[in-house]
Every structure is written in C-alpha cells, then in structure tokens.
Image (cartoon, rainbow, N blue to C red):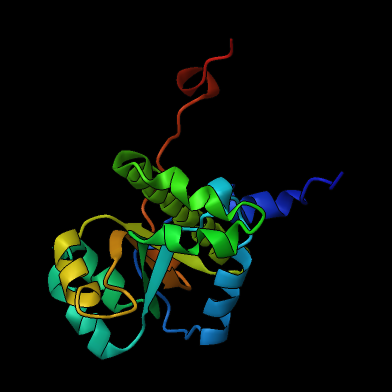
Length: 200
C-alpha cells in the first residue's frame, strides 16, 4: 500500500492553495502545461471515458477573442494570466471508448441514451477539470477557476467552426500561472464535517 503524502503536499494542494485573482509577470513554458495534462490524464473517470477536452489560450490574439465573452470581473484575471484553459467536454466522447476501454469496446453503447450520455460526459469532464487544477497545483502553479462567461458564445467563437473541436462544449474556464499573493482575498470559511456529511 502506498504511504500518505508528506503533510506539506496537503498544504500545497488544499490547505494553503488559494484561488488566484492576479498574476506575477512570470512566464509558464508550454512544457509545463503539457506536464500538467500528462499528470492529470491518469486520474479516474467512469470506464476511463475521459470526455474532457482542453483549449489552452496563450496568445494575445486568442485572449482578444475570449475577452468580450467574459464577465467584466473576470477580464483582468484572464488577460493577466500566462495561460487560460477552457475546460470542455466532447459530445462525441463515446467514439474513443473502444480505444480507452479496450477490454470492452462495446462499452460505447452504454451511452446511447441521451440523458446517460450527457450525465457521463458532463460529470466526468468536470472531474477532469478539477484533476487538472490539482495537477497544476502539484507542479507549483496557481489556478483561477471561473464560470462567469458566455458559454454559448465561447462554443460559437472557438469550437463550432473547427473540425477537431466542433463537438466540444465549454464547461468552465481556469486561468493558470504564478499568482500574485497581494491580490488574494481573505480566506473564506468552509463547512465542518457535521454540516456537510452524514454517516449511516
């Protein structure tokens, strides 16, 4: 059995990790972004379906396309970040199930019902977005997740007319880089075990 991580790892991933609102002027090379993905891709999804898809925004031109689709309070968070990733899910994720679940390629038929299909894609895609944030934190980066944006607008601007991405649907956005701690808010409280849990 693996041993627990060192306590300092829990601080970096959870207890001391904060949502970044502003960023240091410090670049994040693409090799680190690739390492974030290569770490998170091993985390669990139902039947390994891995429905999340990621569009990484780095260039000024791409940020300019995203800017008018953001809630005003989120504009500076995106424009100041070295990277912003649009976490999406693939409406055609089941086409890759035979590749991802090779011992039972017929598993793609489990998702024939449209409600089952959506639930599986959205739930597991959201999980993968959370895994991505943990992977980024594990590699020393800060994250600024946000949902204040025009989702249909993002889908139309970035996905609809691209052959690779035309079946992608946006879920949430996360700015990634090295956070500026001077812009942090006071830490908000969290629910106690007794408030958020029941044991039967």
